[in-house]
Image (cartoon, rainbow, N blue to C red):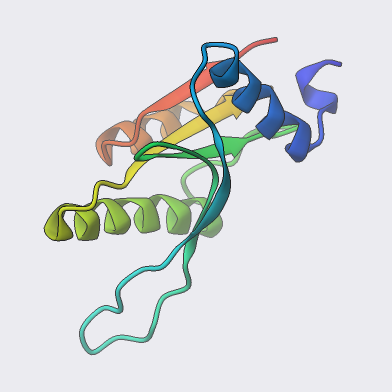
Length: 126
């Protein structure tokens, strides 16, 4: 099935199977709570699509153009990943976010933003 026709669940399985085929244990995604910002409102948890050891995988499957960094949802997800990584480092609990793109690759500005925030990303052309 072409990447653009895959459902998000199928894309997650595609990425999970790549790791499983290399004998790497893949666990289902789960929520990772964020510590509240002092004086700020509580923050919603960040959900990882897949978990591999300390790595937290975000699997993206865009069927048309991938969003730009001016998308509030995408910026929020990146910022939460950075916050969780920082909070984890402070507690000695690694949180290593990665973004995996199946199908449509991220736009250049999204690639640049992920790089600037220190979030590795991978592109799969199937």
